[in-house]
Image (cartoon, rainbow, N blue to C red; front, side):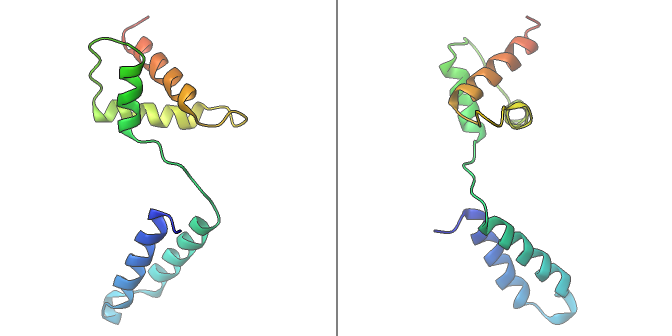
Length: 107
């Protein structure tokens, strides 16, 4: 089964290939094919802003209303600061949310 990224790249390749040559530079197709090949050789399980919202609720932190930008910032922090031997998991997400909210509240 192909990842959503591969499906998108396939659709982009098809769209570019059907366009007139004057607006279909070969380097674009080459780049998309490279992306597709890279995606084919890896897996990922995406974490989303909805996961962050749920984690904030699960942490029993009352009246937390994270913005989408804050949730994205938490996802980025989780990605940047995680331990590669542990990986990205629910506990890491909860910990990242809790630390973010503590810093936000000045604790």
